[in-house]
Image (cartoon, rainbow, N blue to C red; front, top):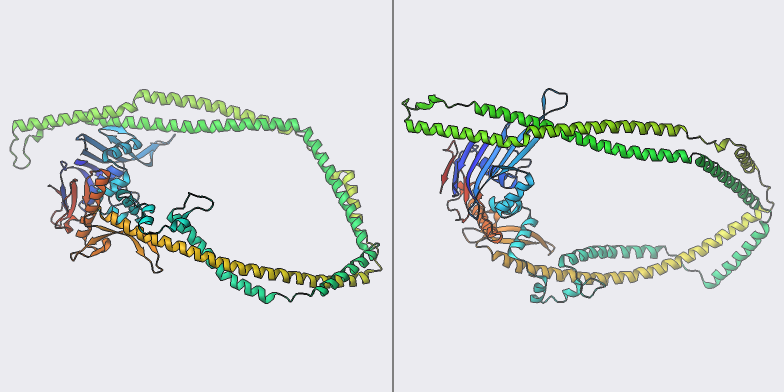
Length: 639
């Protein structure tokens, strides 16, 4: 693609200007603030919907202006030699609300044109992608100098480089660097042929290593803690004596409990529980009878509420549709009026015969030149009127009548549906009035008698047990024996747990050693692949080299993607540390490599071009932005 002309109207600070590039390399000279960057932003805005400067929420509006059309139009020559014109028109939208006499600002909109034909944004994007030969990311990489090396994220640069220059297969790295044992670590457990990728296994292994290290830190402390608190075990004859004494205590307690308060309390508890169960059963019966009486009314209410919900849903849908049609009708009327006024204004424009005098010397302009100017004026006027007629087709009276008919139909439907909603609401209220309130079970004689009996049982005091003192002593003896037996059992469990933890500690150390070996093999693999991949990628560039990994203090590798440029002494320095000229030429070399891979040939914008004495020659059209204090107005030189 080569840019032939660029026309800007109300684009940032540029009121109305046309720039002829003729498909050639060009240098744009101008002092700071004269509009060099504005031209670059306009080109990229047309190509990608983004500015060359990368600013967020970019708008072509000139600050402080309103109700203007901000237009950028570019005529280009495509790869097949055909000519295409792309245009974008960014402007404000003002609407009249119903019942209001004044317009209100409702936002901005962008109109798209291809070869003079209005089109939708999605279609425009598809046409532009086809014209450029690639998507937005590729266009930005191959048109904006420094975008790939400076703006893109490191991981995105890596992805592109690996795609452009090719990766090195894992199997090749393993074979050529004698890392066959790594395959055993990569194999997915439970399978024979399936394997993890290197990165997947590294993540799994590192997570496993962290877990094992935490276990090895925790286990010794836990073992020491358990060993300090474990009691001495009871001898077998001691445990046997305790068990025999415990059986005797239990037998004596059963003899003394026959007439105890506990037995009486259990009987009282069972009686209260029975009364409560009867209350709940009777309450459920009363509620069931009430529900059965109102079943028909509830069914009617439920059916009516379902109908009302469906009707309300349709009503809201029609309301939204009515609002859309009303908005479209208002917009069509306004646009038609604007075009009529514009047509009338252009129709009234007349040739000014006073232009027959030269504004410089005051002498009459030759007749043949005057006639040419008049013909040019009339042709331009005719073209403008035809353009207005063409644009007015989508805002014709027929279209307006269709909108008005649709709006009346929707209003009629909404009125009918509103009446239906009221009818259903009234029917629901009527059905609810027929529902019978159930009698509160808590007011019945049966409930009150049951509650009274429960209260009497709770207030009754059981007789005092004459054997209470002996029972208390037996209970204390039993508690003491059980505590000793429980401590002995807990001690045995603790000693067993200590043995388990020691075995786990040994297994953990063995597993950690295995995982460390796998991580080491992965790092050896990564270093080998780094070397092979870096050599492969760097072979695609003449002077630029790429740093794809950085060595960490802990011996590991961190992925990166930094370009390196040779300085005057032939030493490689980081791109960000190189001078401006070196960075510019390196950026051109990067674009040249990307163009060769993607088969793209887009214009390249070179900012700060005044910093370079010898710019790398390019087969693509280049547009250099040159700061020149002497040029107070923009000046373009074609090369």
